[in-house]
Image 1 (cartoon, protein in one colour):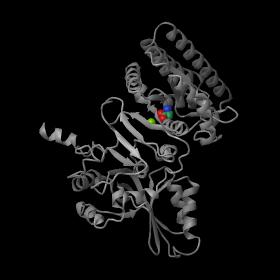
Image 2: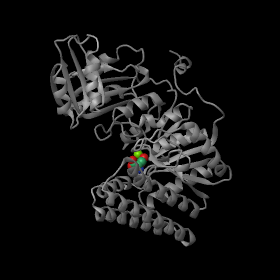
Image 3: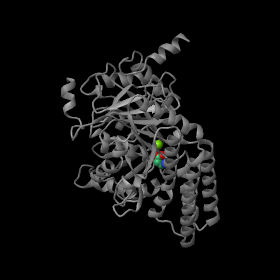
Image 4: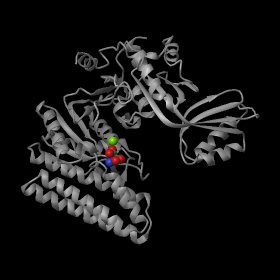
Amino acid sequence: MSEAHRGEKRVGETVTGEIRPSLVVMKFGGTSVEDAKAMLRTAAIVRGRRERGLKPVVVVSAMAKVTDQLLAAAAAAGRGDKNGALAIASRLRNRHLDTAAELLCGDLFTEIRAAICKRFDALDDLLRGIAAVGELTPRTTDKVMSYGERISSQMVAAVFAQHDMNGMHVDARKCIVTDDHFGKAAAQEAAIEAKLTEMVLPLVEAGHTPVLGGFIGSTVEGITTTLGRGGSDYTAALVGGGLRAGAIEIWTDVNGIMTTDPRICPDALRVKTISFEEAAELAYFGAKVLHPATILPAMQKSIPVWVLNSRNAENEGTRITAMAPPCASPFKCIAAKKRLTIIDVVASRMLMSHGYLKDVFDVFDKYHCVIDMVSTSEVSISVTVDSNERLPEICAELSKMADVKLEGHKALICMVGEDIRGRSGISGRVFSAIRHVNVRMISQGASEINMSFMIEESDVDEAVRSLHAEFFQDPDPTVFDTDARVVAAKA
Ligand code: ASP
Ligand code: MG
């Protein structure tokens, strides 16, 4: 299939209006703003982009672990433990104040100190209120969690101002308009685009570096919401999409997407470029770099997303694009997802009888249990699910309609690559590479870009290494960073 032909099926063609090639959205995760040192590293990276003539819009997460601690404070308050909640808030207040003191001086420090104190006073009041009523709602939880990003973004903007980068804080809640699904609010992209154009674009054009907190938004009525854990990447894609940025950079603490987990397989290589579809597939199967939904707003506008390492800024990272360049190797990555359980549902009543599958899936749905893989035969259906504490209840209900068998300690190996589309002989190579491993369930996703199968958890390391050796012996240098391997071989 020719590249041009392949492109036709892709998302990424709904682009309206011109892309702004010099505008770059740079998102920094919690570890990239975890302390004064990290914030300075972040400032240096953004400055580098400005010096290249680019116009950065920066999105930051809360300082590392802050969201977890805010959640813990909210939970303590919800239990009526006012002092416990306030103690957590007080430690957070000191951590932010100490970091600001290390980074800022003069008026900038005075201002930010006052701002931090004001926010934490309001947070204390909120926690006292929650403790007094002894009830924590999703709405107040979002409010509590929002402080992490609200404060980190203000601090980072001040650091940029201190370093002559014209940092300018923008309250993300004023731009990221969402519905009121607290805890995982849905973004309203048209409204967001309008707000960004009105509030952020003029700042960029005037030479400022706008800084927004990720993860947070608000309803049209102005009630604070959050986009779901890890939601700052999503904010970055929304901002990039809304402003039609030339690129979105996700700065994290890894060198980009790797062919597999380097802790399992030291030979793992950096993938230089990968398609949206492949990245989404990978994220679904447990690769922690990006969440698929996250990049959708960017994908729809064909904006390339880069995954980069803020501790190793020279590294080229991984570029995620709407369309994958051709690659001589069939697979891009091998992901493994552990802690899975296989549930076999065997019914004498015909599986294919009308409505039966629905009844089975309804049970999983009722317990909000996500199914990873399904395979069926005439009388049985096997599904794999993340091991979770509701499994006994699910099985009890399924037992009413069938014989049910559970097998734990399973793992899913998922091999992703657009270049397996329509190629033959690939599965033969896969299964002969791991012929010594017992394979339990096999599926080739409808997307035709992944092959996955279940094995025992204890076989994962061995299987991943064998597969990696089979498929990445002679990697295509246009897609994989083979230099690292050459350097290692010479050393
Ligand atoms: N701070 C939020 C979280 O920890 C959002 C993010 O980091 O992306 O989930
Ligand atoms: Mg994250």
